[in-house]
Length: 235
Length: 286
Ligand SMILES: Nc1ncnc2c1ncn2[C@@H]1O[C@H](COP(=O)(O)OP(=O)(O)OP(=O)(O)O)[C@@H](O)[C@H]1O
Ligand SMILES: [Mg+2]
Image 1: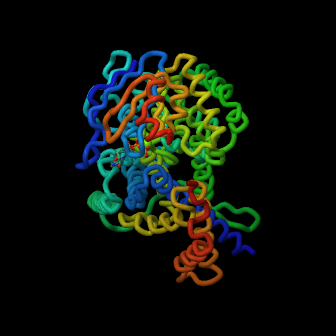
Image 2 (image 1 turned 135 degrees about the vertical axis):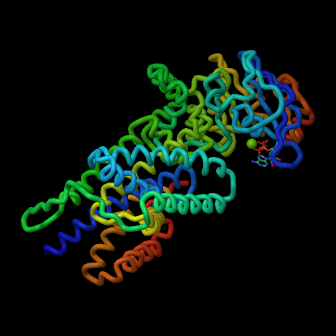
């Protein structure tokens, strides 16, 4: 269970990028975070991963994880697949994936098993294990990026706009994979602008605007909501 | 023909030293974006630590080299921790000024301890080896072999170990590395340690062929920067190739054109290569 209370982020002296965000992800849930450009989705994820200072309270499985370093947060079971993928382009796909298991590096068998699971989930990735990650197509790189986060064997997976730049067919494949990961018991927090795609697999969702949660509800309520329809679905 | 092989040998010796120095500079630039202008002075300090080991502590040549590597690795860690880390998010010019400050500090420090004179670094390996009419000193051969061994170890470490992979990961995407749980601060310290240690090894290897002095870092740093620009900023293979190109241009240019213009010839070669390939031989991937 992830519980975020009153999270605030401010860059320099500008108005806050996040202004008191409350949010939870319960065991087994896939929750989406919808928001336009600049609404604060990536800032929230950076804060959760320990890359950004913030005020407020972040609890994971009851423990305060707000002040932990990134490595400790991954070790607690929160892994992120970041916006823009942030792969290691000149390293092989396999090395990218194995580095994803860096915090669990002493468990070699566990790492090999995780690699096998990622390859089963993304068959395209298996064929490219030896290629430099930067030589893959955008869609394949997105699979590697998700795979790298999964290599940490997280309890909670943070996905920041994984559909960005993918062809519709690839978006569907990616959504199917995320839904499968969630069904296997991993909590998912999925930031998206593609609300139609995100709500098709999420149980619940939040809508973020100017650093505040302006709407929350079940996926079906949000799908029917006029604001969501107008802002994100283009209906 | 003899002259040709003699210059080839010289080029190999000097290229090996340039490579060890430029490698360290490239590693630091590649992983941290820090142009470490103090690198040549770390090299100088390494020479003096080994010099003290040989002439004051009398611990012998190889133990002195090891001591120089260890001491300089520690100095590298301290530099990262105390000088460059606090400046990580500062404008690049602050980092450059800090590096130049460290450079002058180290030079004054060496001058205070050892005086400003040129010193002769004694080597037990001063015998001349003949093979088929060619001559080399033992020390020259040691330089070539030791540099090759150090580079092979470095490559093995970077390419074959997970800890080495963390260095490449930080170089290629620092935020991505932090997100998988790599301690990027620790990697930065490790890179400074490796880089300064390599410089110390290089300085000890060449010290008995050249003389040592507190200002010996200046010409080295100039050349090392030229090399990493030539190699493609931050590229490790580029640094090695660039080092040998510069060294061969110096030794052959000095012999076949003019000794007095040796450095000018070498830099002319660099300028020509950069005109053809402005991003260097191994431009770093996007
Ligand atoms: N490093 C930074 N320095 C200063 N301001 C920043 C920084 N990163 C983000 N911001 C600001 O914080 C706000 C939220 O940005 P953030 O990237 O979190 O939004 P987002 O919802 O992820 O947007 P997008 O959909 O475009 O990725 C924006 O106003 C942005 O300009
Ligand atoms: Mg974003």
